Image 1: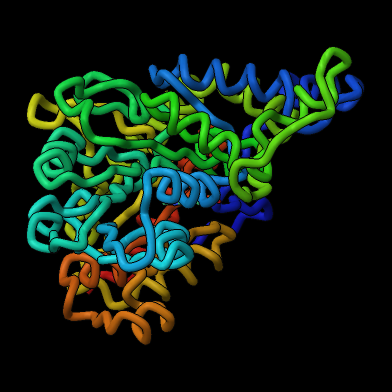
Image 2: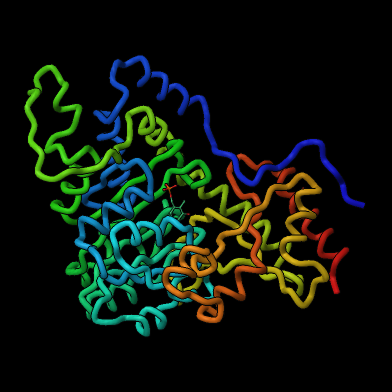
Length: 400
Ligand SMILES: *Cc1c(COP(=O)(O)O)cnc(C)c1O
């Protein structure tokens, strides 16, 4: 008999404390609400945290991905390689630039398969967008090596990867000195479900000053100095426009949240890791379930930031489908989700580029048996125990 709790366990909850609230209130009372000193401070601290030379705050990860591709020179007809198992934004930004999103299958660790990248390179290929799925790092050394050999740009979709490490460095940092010649950026998301949130927001990091400066100018209409400089007492009203830009800036209200969140990001990740390990310890010996890939051992040096906990069902071992499994969790007041519906299954991408299910056997196999369980620092011991209890109970009830 299921234990039905009155309290629900939502799929996700942001971690907002008095510290964040105080800082936002301080900005609200300061007389300066939009992009200014607080955002500059957030950029500086974020760059320090990931070990990057430059960080530019943007309105969202989507905006940052778009501006990165644009500033790195992606244009009509260019081909951009990306994994099919990602959020639609990763592919959409390519379409907005007239580029062709060339989808790749994923590995068992849910990230873009390196041999797929090799296979899909053509004379028109210009860029790769690796996605650090769930906070698990892609093999950046191998990807950058391919990029260097084929003259490709790299824009890392680091939406899940704030705090993720690979090969001894944080994602978005100035690592892999040997491939300095590859023009690249990494783009983070501060959407409320992500490891660090500003409500909505994102950050682009890069090693090249010109890339950072041009992205910065394009976030504010293309105006060659920011609004803060224009309106400061000692500033001038004069500005010039070199090219028409966008309105993709991050406000000081949002950055106030970000600064406080960043102070606690490692604490958040430690708690996420603890909860993820607890899930895996409970599920790993069941033949009906497959736990997420882990980053450990000399063969894969890194740190998982545990943005998501993605459980895989072994379909032949259960009498119910993944959708029914999620419905069973919902009956027990537990929120769950699916990351992701692969890009090649969306009507637009099927119709426009002719993608078919058979083209991506790994992603196809994964997508119908994955469940993202609740995972966030605010989960209590009782919460995680209840989710574990419920999953085990559903498995017992519906095992073949
Ligand atoms: C959340 C997410 C994005 C988009 O982030 P926004 O900040 O909402 O624009 C992009 N890629 C992936 C993989 C994501 O999960």
